[in-house]
Image 1 (cartoon, one colour):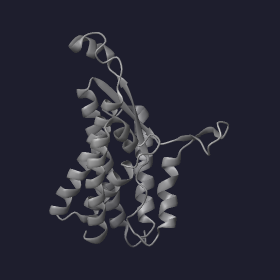
Image 2 (cartoon, one colour):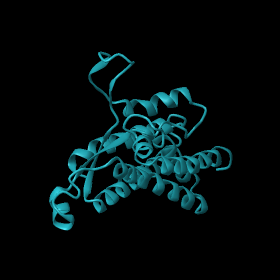
Image 3 (cartoon, rainbow, N blue to C red):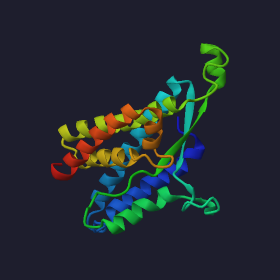
Image 4 (cartoon, one colour):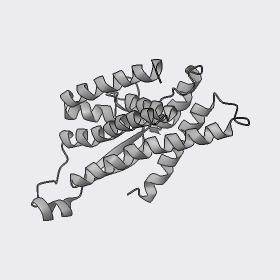
Length: 214
């Protein structure tokens, strides 16, 4: 389900997040902890991605993951970078430097997705024009599915005693719920504000739980 073009950005973000969290560790003495972080981060991200791909498939479309990039800065139309800036690759490291005392708390919204309809399959099942366009509602549903699976995984991880895994799922859902740029939260917000409000409330409760209890 993951094509060749997606392997590098996904792997890069997993490594960056792992090392960002691991900056609080003594790598030589706690390499086993770093391996545990790598495994946890990988599962958190891949769960999110595969769930969204499955939901996209059910909606007769497909998604492709990429690193979150920005092209403009400021409010002026002329204020833009010559090349898209991969902000998703830098924010985990920057946030870790700023929030160094918080061991596992780093920015985790680094991957976004592009969606395109699977026109020929949609034409066969639903008629030629049924799924020739993807609506904001469909985008919101696809994005929301990734948030939901991370929330479910956080609950399961907590009851199974995997506190780090549970906490990282909450963090991943929290940052991706922000209604910014191409992040999942923005897609959900414009696709269905009621759904966004519901998920945002659950994620906020999860954040408080992760910070003060887990």
